[in-house]
Amino acid sequence: MANSSQRLCAGASLAWLQQQGISCHILSGDHPQAVKSVADRLQLSSWQGHCQPEDKHRRISELQQQDHRVIMMGDGINDAPALAQADVSVAMGQLGSDLARSSADINLMQDSLWQFCELLALSKRTLTLVRLNIALALGIKLLFVLLTLMGLGQLWMAVLADVGASLLVISLGLSLVRWSGLPRPAGLPTLADPRP
Image (cartoon, rainbow, N blue to C red):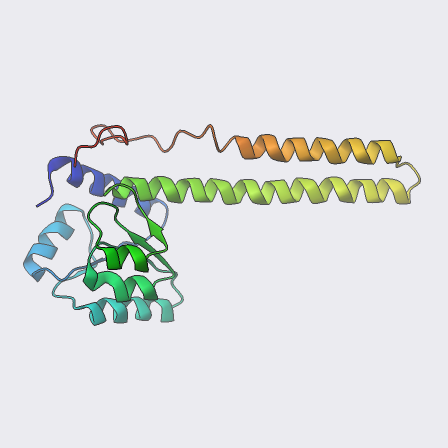
């Protein structure tokens, strides 16, 4: 049975994921009435109870055949086949079985869905910076190729621009180090707060 901070964490995490356009489903081996109760509290319309490992695997395959990219989160032995099938698989840290953790692409260090939201936000931010860095580097190179073709480019200018571009790329990358995470909903435990 989840305590109030776990329910808050799950509710806030699922709301954030849905705001990002990610649809969420519950596939559980628990009794359908218990799964429906949890889904209702979390305001999820897509859920299925009494799932065997092959049912979870089949559902993920169906979503992939409909051209969905699937992230599977699980913590039990019965989640391993579905974790292996998913495009990206995530095992919950402390509660996860050894088989689930070894089948997963990502292992969370805490049993917190919010930690996954922060991972996703940081990944998106990183990808944006990588694209920006590539565009800046190629743009500066193209500018100096054009200047050279027009007879205006000098070697010292190209070297200075190349060093400047490198420093700009590094400084943009370092902004990720200063990222402090998503704003946490009130009452959500922090990494320094090990409450379950």
